[in-house]
View (cartoon, helix red, strand yellow):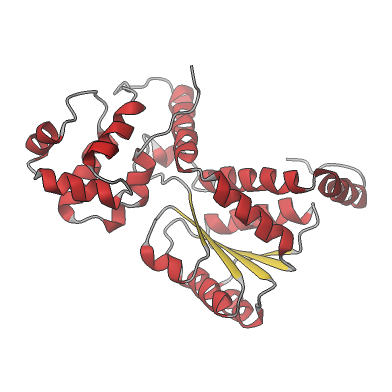
Length: 275
């Protein structure tokens, strides 16, 4: 049995803000549905009181050619889930497993490879975020600094505005904002890209306007529609993605990077941090 399955649900969630009211009604149905029923366009349109044309427009906004392609993918990996889950430990672990499945569904390994190459080529890297995203920025700084990347975490909005002045084509800016709407993060990405820097936004929202200031829009799963999502730290989906990028980065020149890592440990007295 395959542990991870591709699902269209994270794709629906990433595009949720782009839907009309009718399309959000359709999206909610597919996100929340737990039963395998007749998913034909006729049956679903009657069940939701929407037109078949609305189903087609919804599917196209999700990136599919039409409803038939969308529902084929939806049914292909549909798993019926129990409504009630007992036990606190099981509840939390199931929520994490669902989140990992969503990460797998959104994963674009080609894109991750490009971002790893940006990290390898950049003379300096700035990773910015606020709140829980700021903690993730600190983690990224620590992980990549130890393997030789000239990287700095920026968590203060004034510093984000100031750092935008000094970027150039040799810089890489990674913005972390689950909502995608942090003004300081957007400003640093926009101004840096205008100066020739490579820019990456890590977010849960797939919005067309973000491509105006981002070379890469790296999607992570949203906790919003996750069962018991309030039990999960908002940093978790970001940290999972950073681990994947780190793994890809290390593979580019494993010997050199492992040497950097060992040297930093020796500089710290040869001991790992206590976690």
